[in-house]
Length: 82
Image (cartoon, rainbow, N blue to C red):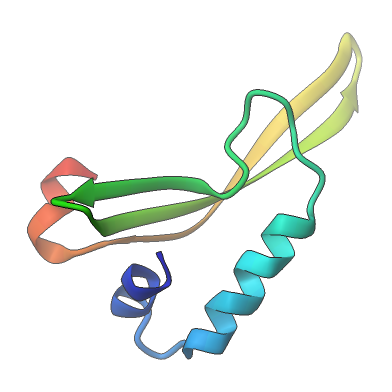
């Protein structure tokens, strides 16, 4: 996953992504929502990643779940599938 993110964001060092994924792992899990986001895989290799941050907020009719999309990166050859 970090390799794909680095290909998409070459100005970010590996340590940046390690820290980001550690922070995501420390966020409270939201039932039925992905913990880190989504990955696109081809032949056992991650070729696309989108990180997602789900949060629960109080709403008028109960809790609402919101998603913030972050750090979307897909290798050029696989962008038609993204």
